[in-house]
Length: 268
Image (cartoon, rainbow, N blue to C red; front, side):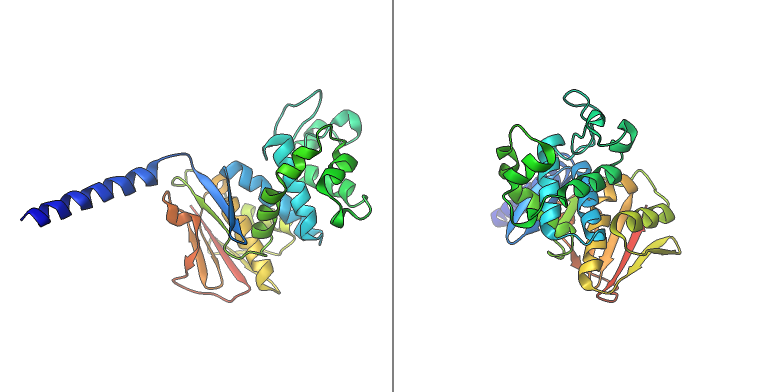
């Protein structure tokens, strides 16, 4: 009888612990590449996915997305800020008075990211240049060493969100309370990543020329899930399913596998 009681108490304790860990803390996302992980809020991760997607669309090297994400971590903590030093605004704290664009334009993450890449690609040899030097050239930073401190985070985000580390991004989220139309999600995916997306029966579908492109699209969708009410993403034979627990930080075998270069995105 005593062993049975001990087993029951132990089981109850484990259940209570599991429930606590599932509901404890704010929603979060985790990116993992080469055995290293970093965690950010869903808002930060969504902005990082936009930064990486635009580098992908422009056919820029992974180094570009690494530099851009590290810069945004330093300048805004990957948030689209409506304030800053003097007239600085947005993800990269760009200043209208310095020719980066109007305040409205800079507060558009897509516009701001493209302007950052426009400046970055004018820096000769930036691909092999220390990030501290790149920061000086593009941002005119007074504290360039700060960028080096966040270079690894930028590299992990760039690797997972560009499809180089398949299944490397996951988000544990509350139940969806918004429902962005599938057509809107498809249009944004195409605008940011440059990948044609269609909608059938309320499901966003992408079929690309490579598995890497598929993983870039799928990773983008997971990163945008909080804001758009996305509940499930499948790439090939792997699926991410929205949930509050730690399981949602990883991808799992798909119940209905699709082609290795295909993606399906389902919303609330």
